[in-house]
Every structure is written in structure tokens, then in C-alpha cells.
Length: 200
Image 1 (tube, rainbow, N blue to C red):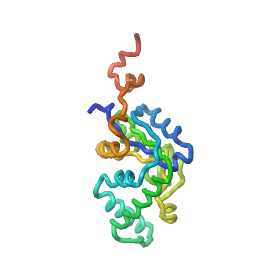
Image 2 (cartoon, helix red, strand yellow):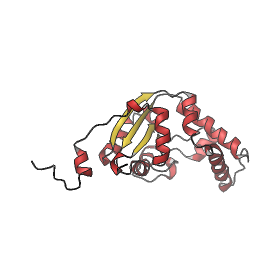
Image 3 (tube, helix red, strand yellow):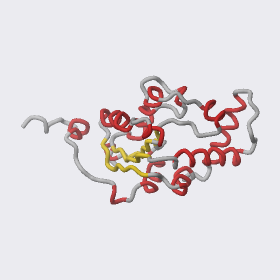
């Protein structure tokens, strides 16, 4: 695999759609030089969301442990000390959130696509995301608000954590024939070693 062929999955979640941020979010990725190779708007089914989050068999347990730890750090008694049970609660919140309306799913391609997208998107919790990131600039939600309301944190976007994760996630949302192969003129500027295609 060449650097320029790395792919990542990005999903603009229902809150991003309802806040009319589709264009703003896509613009951020395109300005960097990432290429959209697949794009669609759908209303996800519960099974699809389930498959997406449970790609890693340890996901539920890991997320449950993080949730319990977050409660304890705040000096609050967690609703349960069982990581699987806590993870199931998080998963149920995500299923409700992700199936509540349309999402825009896309596959972006380019050098370091996963890391670049994660950097542009910002941390999972909007409150602690840096200014300049999508979540830091456009969302005021926090874990504390989400926990108080008994819902998933509204953070606009899902972005694959790494190339291996992206490889597993993309087929859940796209068939192979939906991924397009084409050249952008800017590819020459980004990836042509000698820039010898500029002057004719």
C-alpha cells in the first residue's frame, strides 16, 4: 500500500445532519487534500450500528471500564461496577443515537488519512476538544451532560481509529463496488515527487 491509498471511514452523525454541518465538515477534509472515494446518506439500522461498534470483541468491556473509571474520577458512584453491563448501556445509547435520523457515511483517501481525520475531528468529548477541531468548534456537549441525560455524547462524527479499524469498518457501510477509483488534479501536487507535471 502506498501512503496515498490509505482509507478511513467517516460518519457524520444525526446531530451533524440536523445542524446543517455536512458541507462545513466535508470542506475541512477536502481542504487538507483528502479525496472522497465513497459517499452516501442513509438511516442506519440497529444491526448495522451493532456490527460497527462490536467489530472489536473487547469493545463493550473496554468502553464499560472507561465509563466506570470516568464516574469514579468525578467522585460519583457508577450505576454498575460490571464493565460488560456498563458497556451494554453505552452501546444501547449509541444505537438509539445513530438510528435517530439520517447520517452521511464517507470513505476518505490520502496519506495518513486516519491520523489526519482524527486530528481534524478532535477528541471524543466535545468539551475537552481543542479549538480549531470540528468538535471543539461546533459542539458544546460533554460526558457529564450525556450521563445526566442518560444518552450518548453528541459529537457530530465517527472517524476510524487506525487503518486496521478502517479496513474492518468500511465494509459495514459500503460494498466494494461503491468505492471509486479516480484521479484528482491535486494528487499531482500532493504526491508527485518532482512536480514535473506542472509546466507543459
